[in-house]
Length: 536
Image (cartoon, rainbow, N blue to C red; front, side):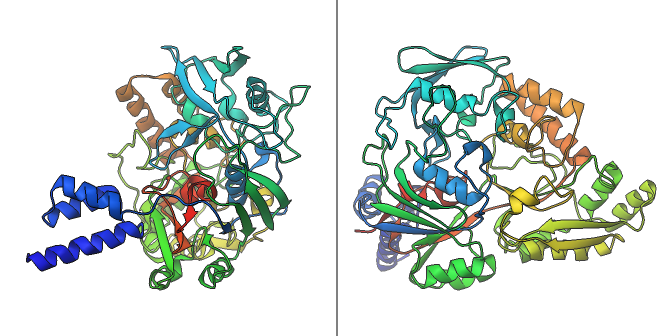
């Protein structure tokens, strides 16, 4: 390579760094390949990389999946728009950092006993609610108790089922006492339902007012339509660079992308993958693609015919051509699923489990065994589930014809899909956000008594392993347990999992962010409003 070509590469790398198109690791690798020393490459990164965050401006975000039935009750959060809104005006004990690690929010530090049955969280004494009141241990306890007990209607009740007591230590800290050890409790505290809200005198929480202790104050909310925010000047963490924020619900993917292209919004969630290549050519836009543990699931009610027959369930799992789905629907931006809800982006990944392939002949054999050769079933789906979700189900129906299965695709309204269809209809299509560990995911949606057990699956051995793995501190033993659980879910469970989608979203070129993007939710772990900024 000539000296001129070396310099050309370095100049291009510097440009990429300034525009936020390359990570520091990649920058260092390619700079040194072009002949730079490590110290020189570090110096160039420091001077050429993206400018430091700048404060100011009004950020406009177009978000998918919003419903008029949404509420401020954190126990009822369902839609992505409300998850985005929640992370904009509310805070949690802990959070997912941009690099995917578990970091502090309202809690500054935490520790556990050796058996992981007691966890103590020290609270940030700078955390305040938008109403001006300081966040106290009492608020944390009331916020957690909102999701506990037999009378709770929260979807997160199962996550806190093992919590026996939460105590105020009188020194700005709280202690969780568990019936069984839970090595993942600090991760569990990032769940989007477990927002810290102000306590009422009776021990309940004030969720109706919209008061929070997050980076922005909620000034106006029209559920399923739009939300307005102003910076919370007493925010206890870094960030909140924008002066104000508007989150507008744009369920239609074409309307969402048109708003971005025309400059009516500054960023959008979940772009239309059909037009990914076209958007990548627009000089005014930047595309962000993040591998994640998010998942597309197709849960079948295991207690409703014909899905109560395991041979029928497995026949349907064998009747989908996952690779074609990924190629034609996800346009390659996904990892193939294997009918257990544990992605390679999670710890304890069971990599040696054989991949289930498209096999309509075997599916026919199983249906004959079940006495259901002429199987006809209906699957519900809506455009808002994810970009291409209806097309995916139609393509699946074509695949299933080779097995003699008639899948009728019912296109449901976008509005109210997660309140009127999910957990109501016996077979539907769902998009799950990424969870940090398999325990959190399995506890939320596959545990026998979980409110969100979307397939109504009951497997005694699976639940026994789930309880054992939760408190197992030996990583090797824990990995073995998750391996067995994955096999059980694959072979007996009621959920078809075609793929784990990458997060693919877009922003105007003047919108900047840090080196990493959190893999937990779209839009930088649903924290784009507080982590991103406008170029100065």
